[in-house]
Length: 505
Image (tube, rainbow, N blue to C red; front, side, top):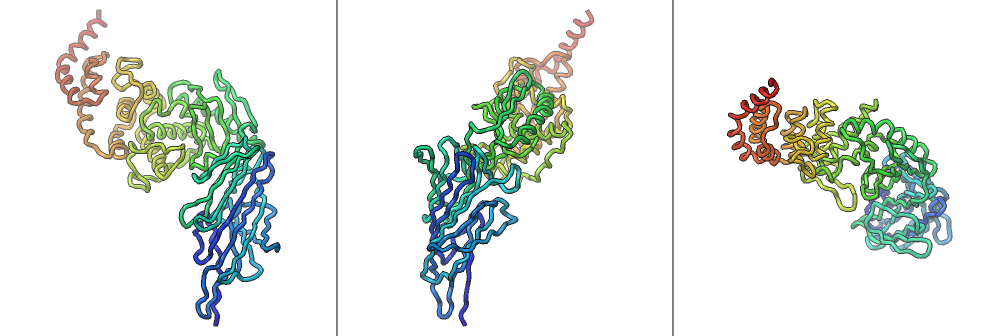
């Protein structure tokens, strides 16, 4: 008896090349300048390379290609003949469906078949599970290049005025008249080519003016997405006063524009603050915590704080606290431990090149939020404001505002000093040792000197201890600080006595 085997190619985004079936393809996606459907065509050639074995014959009778969900006018042609196409939905990939093409006859060993699949990509409404978007001035969709390594080509043609963004590094660009063609010809070994792309005309937006204090701010939304602008405007009005209260200083006002752009999601981000262009860019989700996080970066950024975990953790803490104070429900703290997947010491967590988010971020963001939240546990809002404003001013815990020990920025050592000197978690040093530095050798000596310093500061009345001692404590030069503390212990009561006499006189 003959054994018949029908094989249908899997249609996950990174589907591996089908064993025994040689596949080559050329795909083209053309974005219309006026916001009409994206015209797509995928021409692929299949060759059965699985030889017969005795009375066993291997053949293919159908083939599946992922296409964007909601695609219209889906047609498959082969040799001038129209083939049957079934669209199969997937619960796992809501932005894609499988175009399952049925052959008019079996594809036997040594035979080839060339098929051209054409379809129109139309967009889903904002905030749909299907992430395909096509509107005037903006398009976002998935592109597929089925084929064995070195046997595929994908072209995305966009009007030259549109900015192109993608999740893949494989594209190269070439301008020709009114359009720019972005081409990819390679993919990871043994995988199809798959990428998310977006094209945006930054001049085609719906603008809304917002007055923040004494400054005007512009909101730029996709055409037709008035809900996004209304949400951002309302959230700004509720959240900014709360952030100002928590930070302890007025909003710097360095943001001139908040822009809706889902291309941030292509890089694994929810949004970002760009100080060079004075703008905040966020996706289409109506997420107060995300907006507040990015707004807080006008204060909390690398120009004031040394360490990504410090400024990202503080921004997320402030965002969630502001949501709570506004009467909303904060996002749950993701489960994370020092040994979670992609873990690293937080002092080693750095920005990736190109503004992308990578595997380390899946640990860094939740871990930073957890550590900062625990460090500030128990502190009242006014104490939090004192800690954060001092950190941003570069004022150490052992000095006054604009004092002689003023620094250009604050690192984790200075931030820890501020936390434990202004009502934060007394055990914050243990958190830092576990999550940030990975060692605790510094803790015992520091704790001892801080205890001695506090006793001296209490004994000498309202005066600050001498500058040399405060400088040594600020720089964590604890051996030097110990020498000063020993010499000053006897004179501290005398300093208080002078103050008392002056008050009595």
